[in-house]
Length: 203
Length: 203
DNA sequence: GTCTATAAGTGGATAGAC
DNA sequence: GTCTATCCACTTATAGAC
Image 1 (spheres, protein in one colour):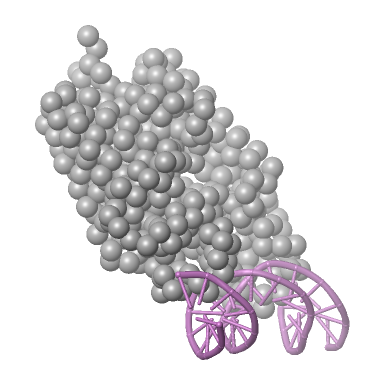
Image 2 (tube, each protein chain N blue to C red; image 1 turned 60 degrees about the vertical axis):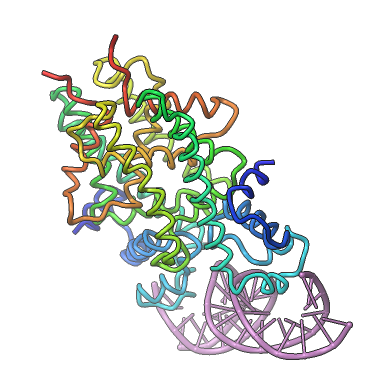
């Protein structure tokens, strides 16, 4: 289900095996991270031998790279879509929508995005170029959004935009360490976070 | 130097070998995390054979557990000390001092605290009891501080204290992913973060 | 307290049959 | 496209000499 949603966010047609491998890898990377997740584990969970993975991918790094990039692309598109859907809303509503979309991608059944955060520091010390680009592109969305919010006086204009963006995204991503569905809904969390970074003006 | 400071924060006298091993492990864990850091690496950096590590520790997990706990104790004591030093300051100054102490422990030469964050999700899925206790104890400091700040109206009283604390600590700890010394000073970062979570009232 | 030597297992990756 | 079989480097950990 969420897998279907995530699939729609990526390339249209391709062999189902490749997708199944990535889905599985995403799930394992989400809980185990890079070094804990082994090719044997992935293969077993998929239901094939680990040697068969090499028909679809050239290396472990290639699998992880694909998962990580898909994860960032997924949250990227979700946030862009949320902003488009709230194009005519107030700036503050737009901010809350973006926060909600980011958190939903993180805590919904989207293994890719969580795996992406968990695997932030990659196997190889400098992340592959593709990873850096994809992240940079998503960052750009927030860079623009922060600028819009500062211009609209929803976020404090006198604060450094970079610190603001890093502060907010750090807090959002950090929620993977403590948030567990069931106590709050993600929507409540989003409202709470939006209120913290951009307090509603006292009426 | 920072190592000396950190040492002072822990047990007084003990064999220097054990300490040296932990210092080295902390440094490697900080950059590599749990699974990337091997006993061979640690031993080589210390200048002994890896088998010799087993004279001092029973297992890799025991080494990591010691580093992680020392790291949390270090930042814990640093924040408590900062609050004590600002006992008579305004609530807002106390908050900024606590944020500054936390960030300094994270980005100074304190390998232990950074390693602790990086190794947050431990090897074994449920972290050892000792780790959970030590973290809980530190959390308590912030729980009290947040309550104090909400009472003093420095932090918004109408927001959920738990969300507030997690939001703030997430943002602080997330800075390990992007902050690099040199551009800002840690003190500037602390001031910026304090301003973001607790905007000064417009005069 | 540190060493050499080694066990027992697992990691990623490849060759080649089917 | 998936399999069996295998390679080899490297992992944590132990045994026992010095």
